[in-house]
Image 1 (tube, rainbow, N blue to C red):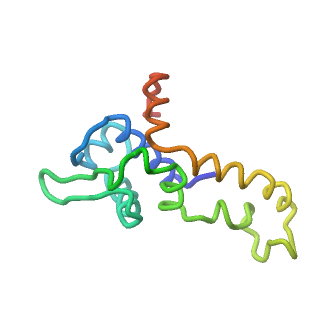
Image 2: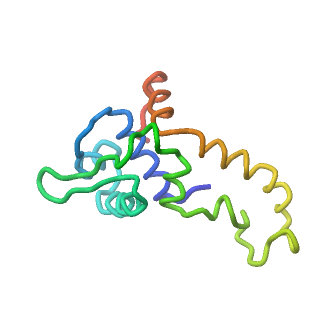
Length: 142
């Protein structure tokens, strides 16, 4: 459903949200903790920074941190920043021309579930997820 970049981006921001840390954290540290390639993670954080979800600082004491509180950032925000809105706006099969006038074989069925899925992601914050991860003692490492 999501690209590999989006999966890693979600894991990375959830990891940061579980830390309750208010300063910059190096991408290298995040990559090592989550076993994600630092160059790949850097590209993901560039997208998140461009979307205004993260702030970044170069240099030895640099890294990334949330631009807004995890209570204000939803899973939807992260997904759209990394993968774009296509999952919620375009044909799930990727067929050109699919729409109300000329629907693909899955159009009607996908239309029925797309909005509830979008609403789930749009109403679930990083803080909500971090709290659940801590309560269930879940690991973000594969």
